[in-house]
Length: 202
Image (cartoon, rainbow, N blue to C red; front, side):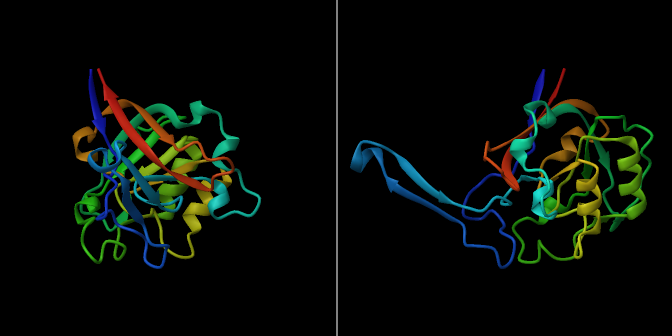
C-alpha cells in the first residue's frame, strides 16, 4: 500500500485569493517560553486545498454538513491534461460515483504572483459529460475549474457534484485508480473548507 498526499502545505507562503481576508499563522506560545506550544490560525473557508459546497455560490444550496461522511470518500482517478488551457479530454475511464481529478501541472506555479491568473479551465462540454456520468467530486491542481461568472461551478452544484481546488502532487497518480479520501474540516453549514486529500494505492 502507498499513500499520496495531495494537499498544499499551509504556511505563510500558501497562496490566498486576491482580495480575500489576510491569512494569519502565528505562534502564541512556545514550549521553551510557556511550556506549551500553540498557534493561532486565521483563514477563510476557501483557503489552500479546499472543497466547495453548493452554498458557496447557490442561495439556499447544500452546505458541507448536509452530506454524510461517505460523500468525501470514494474511488478516484487522475486524468493527465497537462498543456491544455481549455481542458477537453477522453472520459471513457470515468465511472459513476468517481472522484475525478485533472492534472494540469498548474500547481507548479503556486508561489508565483500570477498564480490566480491565466489558469486552465474545463470546457463546458467536459463539465456536461462529467454531470452525465454522475461523478461524486471533481478536482484539479489549480485555483478554479472556471472563471467568472463561474457557470461550471453552478452546473456542478446543481447536480450535487462538489469541487476541490488547489490540489498538488497529482502527477504521482496520473492515469491511475486509487482510493481517495477528501476530508474537509467539520464546519457546521460550511460553504467550503480546507481539506486533507490523500490517495491510496495497493
